[in-house]
Length: 220
Image (cartoon, rainbow, N blue to C red):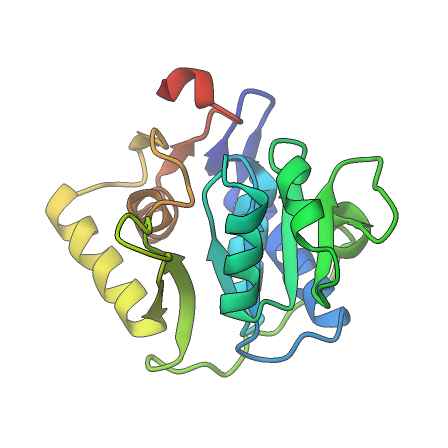
């Protein structure tokens, strides 16, 4: 069954699972250790989903962040989270790449052409690989989400594996979704609503997520 539907194609659950394995294995090959944070600063796209699930399965901690932030914003979040890698695309690279000057984190760009010091996401995370689930527990941290920072610097909120699953199950029970249903990812995937609803809840229910890639024009 399709899990992810974009303007270009449908991605089945099996394909998303395989792509997540490839992404998680590639991140581990960079030398990243269990619990290390991975900033995901991209538009809504399949690679966002692959990196998100791949990192979690590998025992890493995805940190989805919003588009449209400044160089200083991205630099703060990378420094604050002590991220080991940052994934960006053409929608965010103009701010992300300069923010990484002098930083030790790996920068992966979803693009065929990468500037010096930046690696291709496809080169690192696109090779078919098998990935055994990391031995994480319900108490281990599954992901970080940053607050908006309206009253000061953004604050990283740490969400455990147990909280992620319990919240997704509560959503599923309330919405009564079935595998024949389809949902629209109308909010940015970096936001709490879509991180839970369009990905975790959909995955538990077996339904299909419609993701208009780089749909900023739709949202405005």
